[in-house]
Length: 421
Length: 203
Image (cartoon, rainbow over all chains, first blue to last red; front, side, top):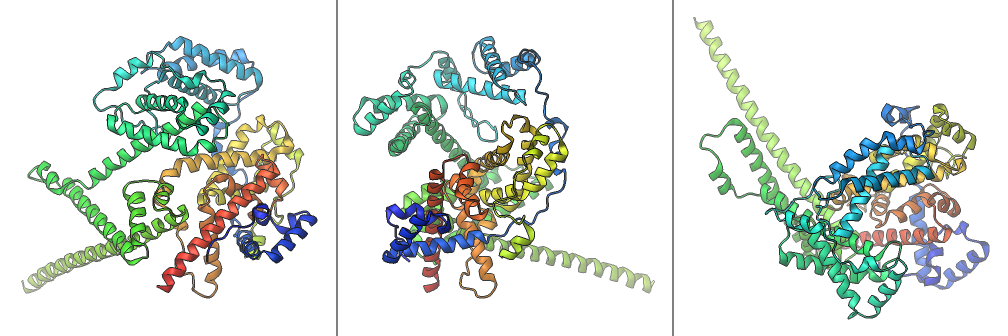
């Protein structure tokens, strides 16, 4: 079935429930559907989807009375909100100091000044409204203050993964010179632009690709990359900057002015750097998992301990599993339509760790199709691996059965000897 | 399927009527009153979250977290009559946090419930199950959480456009756009999937 687009003026109305439309609109829509086969077909499909959505089963879980309270625990009880701002400030003063000191430990910053700024912000917030969890609020203020400093001073604080795990630091200790640079603020043309000036800048950038703004943007991105990914090689860094600039160029027309332009570009930069670190981490992990068996053999001592044997066995099993998985993926590609496209999608998503969107873009297909291919291939590979596990289980059972038979034979021998004597 | 829904879920589509006095009592620290709200709205929030995150177990957990967080911050609720919208906002924030956390894992290894059912042409009562699985997959494949939230409230929970807009803190026009975009993505996904199946079956 070929996908066709509905007439523009009816696109939104077709998606709504017909009974929700005002009578006049409904009548016009019905009249249009009678003459437009494309919209009529889409309408039928939408109603089928609506029926499917409406018949999705409801949850069968029965809530237990007071279950919400059991999970909240005593420490999550609501705090009294009658306390004055100054007494809360006094109570949390030590906490602010220690948190600021801890957060700014690696950076040469004036801790007292930062703590004072945090106190001031907390006081401002307390004056406006009660704060149920001052500690959480203080943590957020400190984080924001440090982020602001990082942006303004090209701070070299390594980015954090979502779980709070730190991404790899510089391998050769190059972090120190960057730290030293952090104290000197870098020139940032974006910070000079007023908030409402972003519109003018964006318009200029969209209108004129040779505008100096692009050069300024490139410089801004380069500095952020330099600060955020100091341990990355120069050529790789240029690629990242190029990649970020491409993303900015492609998406600038969709910028909605909900934040500063610099914030938006900063976010793109940050996510690109995160991607680079993630890819590197994945590559390191897979390199460790697939390590050359000969190298591994050289490193092993001559008399392996049972622990090592177990490890070696596990490693062997893992290697077998990987080989079978890869063979299964190859088989999947060979036995399905569009082998070239599928191979590229699987390579990008499973091996290189790209997102579905990236893979879909590369092969020019919808992300949903890329997702479908990946899921199907994974399912196929899982089935093959399940067979491997079943085979191993069978072998293990046969071994055990052999051992039991041996034991029985020994017992039988002993009994015969006893009886004979 | 509609009957089973009626058996197990609260009877009204769009959720039970809000009793503001209970919210006021709960806001004053009455645990019994909050428990009434919990029992009354748990299904509504759980359904919303299950479809938002695409996983039943996680949906229940997040619904539980929503009520824990709601109890903790009930003191900050300024308008008791806006309780439900506020509760949905907490649920959305919790779901977004969760989706952000699992983003990487989600894009590479998908849980079995997101797998497509291959044998689409099988006859009999399984067809309905397949259709449900298919629509769940399509819903999970929607690119933006906001479209999924709008579709869940409007179609799955049967709310009106105005109510959906109120609960998601959006204008009605924006809700229409989100529903339309969500439906377009659902349709594209289902068409694409059907195309692939047809090709493979022909082969």
